[in-house]
Amino acid sequence: MSIALVVIIRSVISFFALLLFVRLMGKQQVAQLTFFDYVVGITIGSIASTLSVQVNENLLSTLAGLATWALLAILLAIISMHSKRFRTIVDGNATLVIANGKILEDNLKKIRIPIDQLLSELRTKGIFNITDVEYALFEAGGKISVQKNAQNQPLTPESLNIAVQYEGLPVNLVMDGAILPNALRSLSISQAWLTHQLGKRNIQDIRDISLAQLDTAGNLYVDLKGDKPCYTIPTKD
Image 1 (tube, rainbow, N blue to C red):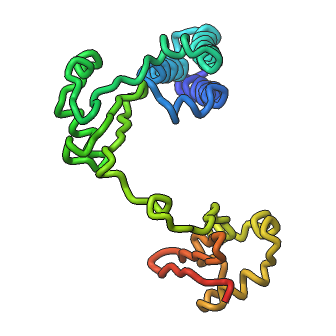
Image 2 (cartoon, rainbow, N blue to C red):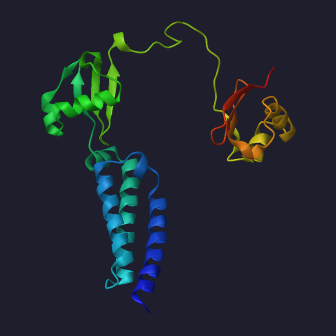
Image 3 (tube, rainbow, N blue to C red):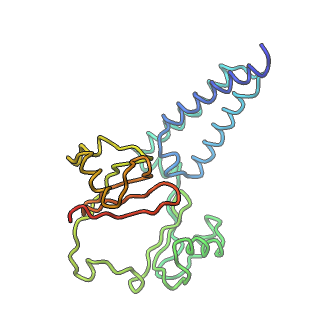
């Protein structure tokens, strides 16, 4: 058997093994990535790469190493879900870096974050003036959480005693030129009703639609493919 064919076979095995283990590890590994998760992910990827192209390495032993790392990551995640103390040991705690508008330099030194990086992180939150900040924390995953002081909190309808209507999630009716029958059934509407609404904007071919979704106020948003325009069609007229 040629080396190229061996590499192809090992790559296929490595690909699907990695896919299986990533699925087992769950979305938490991406959605709440900590530095430890990052290191584990890099290591697992490196083992998968070795499994794929290092033809001199034993296939089963390398696959066993990949499985061991993935299963240990799953085990740690399960234990962390049930033990706050263990989760703190693995991931660490959030670190307070600004309190009552005052930068806590000692805490910044503990997590080795320079002030200019702190200011950069604040700018990503739309904060350019340090006096606008009441509290700021660096979370265990490296992201910054900020509470603005009272004078800079955004106004809300509740703060102005304004009553607002409930706004739920819109429902996708058409996606990539195809009608979603389950969505129509969930709203008890027919394809004929949808065709009638689209006809208000002279949209005749469903295949021209990139996305069509209906919100709880009865407005049908339609985005046509390519350079064609998008529309908001009231359906309760």
